[in-house]
Image 1: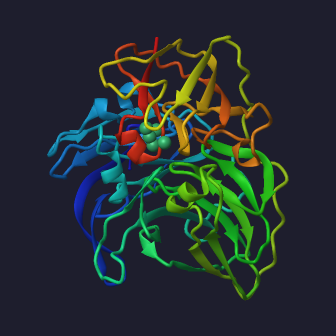
Image 2: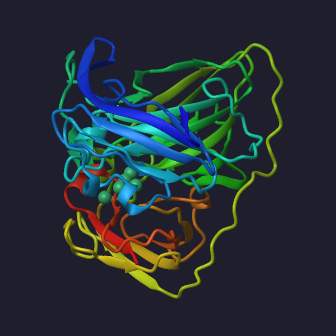
Length: 426
Ligand code: C2O
Ligand code: CU
Ligand code: CU
């Protein structure tokens, strides 16, 4: 809907029951339905307005994860939407083409609401086409991965397992579907993968053993496709991958065992040794394999210029030894400045780190070059125990000393336990 040069979206938060696994109903929540939410889409330069109506029995919020928006429009717990009311943020899209997403952020209730299905994609397009497959639902496929719990041997929703990284389920659903199957009509697919799980990490690979190509990270496209055989995605991270579908044969995108850097026992209880199918793809009978794009439009990476360096230490559920306090400002940043943030995981638990209102560059990982999966614009980065990352963070121009943005671990049980802090731009 375009009104007076504004792109207008309407979301309504709802609760209900959804049969996510055949024969098993779950208590769920969603936007414009009882599970997940519509894909919103805008082009750089668009003015966007979203009317978010809360039809739940409890308060919620709508946060635009990865979006460069003023703090007052960011949809954190400071912009709570009381039940029965509507919140109508607006902003102008000024960032690179990317796969962003939206989800609630109510203080202490984020795991419950996101885990119940309140999540949707927000795709940003550039005015110039990228040369990548872009026929939504045909060769440009969104994959929202979540985990749910089915009672063992039973036909009912169960209770998730408590692990060092948070609560995990035993059954994976993709776009709200159990064991999805996609019949491709083209030989090349672009998958936009979002890990919308509360805690579970996925290590993606193709059952054929073939490489796929990473073409985009959280905040935009890479400068060129990067071949890889596996790709780890922790909660909230996105990856755009290109894959070649074998002609008239099947390939399964699956999640395979990985190492979260914890003890063997903690890795195991945290689900890191599990194998799950994510998407079964049947290749089309015809069609030639299109060439891989050699270059992708991408913006220049920022230089750290301001000289301000900060250090953050991740504990079990704390940042710099503190728990979230909505009335405390932890960090004051000059608007439009670029800072160098070092984030060190000093606990025995795996974590990740997300900063609101910006996209950053991983300048270093453990003092060396970042892993290939972290060599693009990011808003969430995985940090295993004992590891550290250095982030070059260009902050926006939206000075507002009265309204904080957040940075936090995006493993939602950790976040709800208080592993979150606040910054303002002045
Ligand atoms: Cu995806 Cu603070 O959130
Ligand atoms: Cu966010
Ligand atoms: Cu964490």
